[in-house]
Image (cartoon, rainbow, N blue to C red):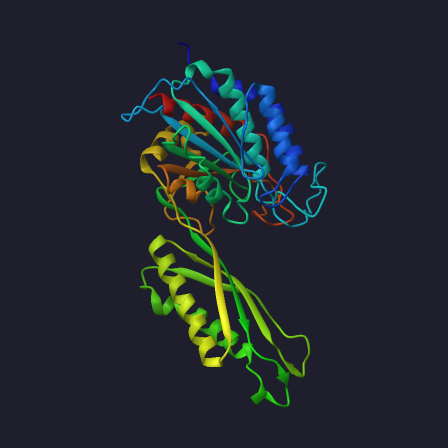
Length: 394
């Protein structure tokens, strides 16, 4: 059987890839419910000949391949390709002809992830007879809220067919256009988004003895969080905690009833993450007890993304062929950002890599002015397609 020329096939679909990217970019939606985005992707997949399977409110998956290459357990060897498709609740400021219409913007590049995955789906449908295993392509909502992947995993996306490996791409707008970056082992930080609510008792500021002041607890919590990492982790390990929201009161001469805090904890091992989370619960409980107020802390969290060396080595050789060995960079340490792809990586050996889409503007992800290049995206689609086919067929 003649092997597909994936680069030529990806180039054939490049114009459609860019059209898909621009439509998704212009119609950005936030969160778990993405009706326009889901409808567009589903329509495109159906036109290719797929029957998309729905997941949660706006997730989709399709599976392609003959499924004849079996594991030792007798299951078709299957690799999952994840594309996150939600946007950020940030108004875009880049002067693009296809700029987002509303207050949401694809400032993290998820429009590109969705468009590249659609192109991979087109390529694989055309060469399906060459795929002796199975490739499952997943379009995932809710990455920016850090738990869309977790919900999809709990809903069963890793089964039927059983997934044996996962691959995820994230664009990197402040990296050279067409470059590839990945780390071996830990690839991203773990993150905890936390919310702290404190309930006290109000009183006039002339009678503080009549109050139970939530600010006393809030300030104690804040200062304890600032010093927590230094006290709890070895000097050879690190984490970052930051409070971004601190709210209380509405009048200068009244002690408030409630206080509210929100922030993030970033750490680089799942063990440190769990330990520091428990420390934070204790800090809140103790300061609230000292102030005589009630308090609670709640977390939405994502673990560390662990990259599998075998899959990284397999894909690294393919990236060398498509973008040049000199443009494939193995990072020495994980990035400080997080990605809920980590929940897929907990279930099967995985690889998360970054594809450079750097432009002259040079802004980073989440900047409302960010601009991302499109002319090398077909190479990402070609490499992903060949990597998936060769992995599940070997």
